[in-house]
Length: 216
Image 1: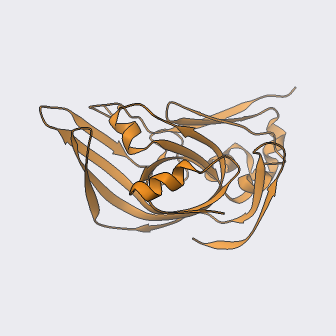
Image 2: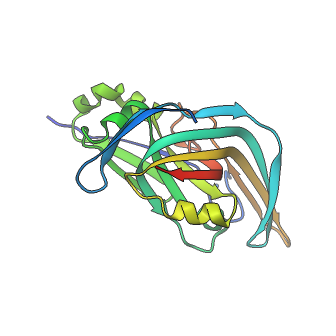
């Protein structure tokens, strides 16, 4: 009997208090019905230790953005989600991208993945567990896909990210970051990135300060 699998990655986020809230080989893109597609030859993200950071003032918060790792990824966009409230999180990161690479990107067209995003989580499921054999099972999906909270470095990057849609292959570079802030009169903000592709569940999303965008 067919069965469904579902997994998710999320970083907790809420106003005031959170947590208390490229290497590119030859790439072949194959599009099919709707926005579903696949891409062959997408390598694992490249992550290198980094130092430094930048500051930002937003929604009354003074924010310190600390660079953890430089991050370079070329991936298939399997789902997107826009966030448009006036919260500090949505102002910082108006769009999440669910990205896939490796075997998951290659077989996304063949496997009947059902991708979705909601409330800063991403979810996937399949109707038959046997379909996951080519991607290494459920663990293989977790290793080769991730939800990314995109924090644009400037207005030009923000506009470029706004154009990204499901089915695109994108090259993004920048930094995985921790963001910590305080607000005059009280209130704190904390949003910390995952730095591993092997984690799942709460706190496993990448908080990605993006400095470069290419849509292929």
